[in-house]
Image (cartoon, rainbow, N blue to C red; front, side, top):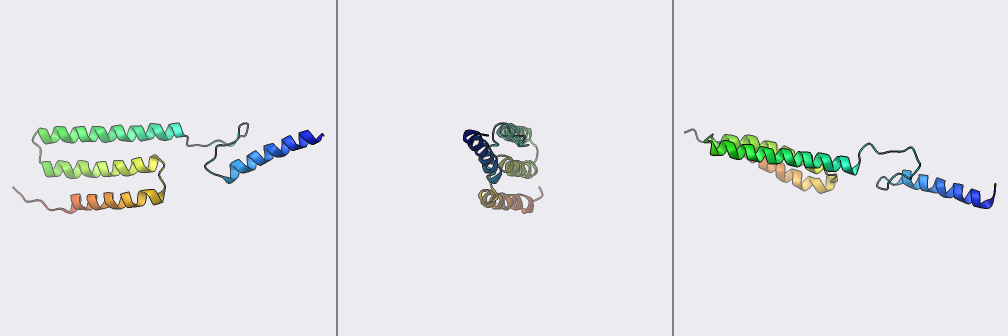
Length: 121
């Protein structure tokens, strides 16, 4: 074995070790390690969650225009939208420190929507 072959083998081992030690770097080419969650998957699911949110907003708009009780419609669909936004933030890949303030705000809004009493007419 020549010195060049040994150096090449060591470089390959270093690339594999570097790939294992950092979770954000991609797996080296030619290794069997593959991620179960790709950027394409995250983008697809994020887009699906946003489309669902748009459908919920359109349905709520239709129900309000149709003359349904506005408070009830906003409570139900507001809660669904809050859950949808929370799921989107998780799926989009934000860390827990980035999501924490937003989750607090969403929880406050949900508490207001569900805890507010309405007057019977």
